[in-house]
Image 1 (tube, rainbow, N blue to C red):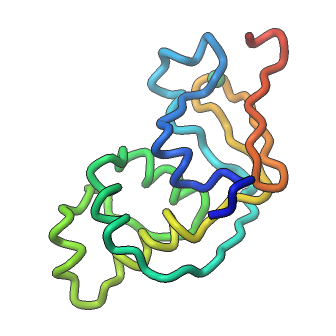
Image 2 (image 1 turned 180 degrees about the horizontal axis):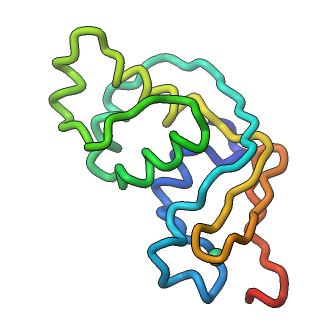
Length: 136
Ligand SMILES: [Zn+2]
């Protein structure tokens, strides 16, 4: 996770809906849907404590939506219990979550609002949430 780019995790923890006023109260505006995402994956050492802490705070359905858009990991439809991660024999889910939450940054692409269809560009890892004037 570099300082100047926003990781998938940061989007999730922020639970940030689309910024347009008309969309703030719309269920369809969260999460934003990644499109044409160009990913950068930087391998880092496993951090089991991080996964334990973050798992209960994630909106799992949002995570699944992001995963589908980024095509970076395969997750089950239901959130696993924290204990399940430790009991897993192959450690597959733990590995998928680690990659998605800690190693993946979106370098280029866009985030699409599911309510109004507005496209927020991502450039060099930074999502541009500035709105055109007609949406403010
Ligand atoms: Zn919108």
